[in-house]
Length: 135
Image (cartoon, rainbow, N blue to C red; front, side):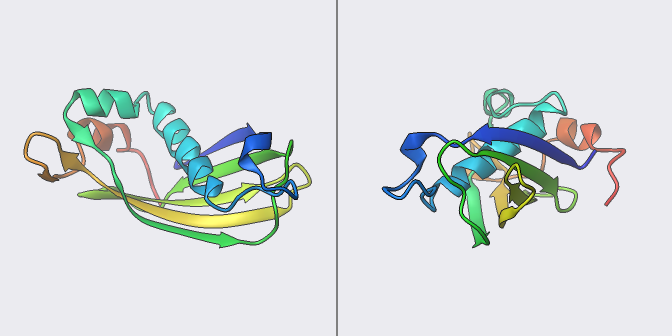
């Protein structure tokens, strides 16, 4: 499975005075989607960090379509764009409960070797988990 769907309820603190989700919170929703995408393969950021790998975001793009609002339940659909190399790329869609598209997005994260503080290839254990993955 190359995608994951996660539901998040919009909290009051994520909105502005009009009850609309503040734009920067979409990046947080994408992070939740990525984290859950990894979990479906039995992996976590914590596991990778313990193995000496960090995954900083090096690119973030958000296209806002409609407003998410306080107390909405939004579905974050996270999709792996291509097999990872020294980076991993995801596409996102955020939908509300009425199946209205709220936003689309993309992130690219680099695999960083903590000891060398340099980019590195995707860990073999992640590639092994994705071996049956097809685009």
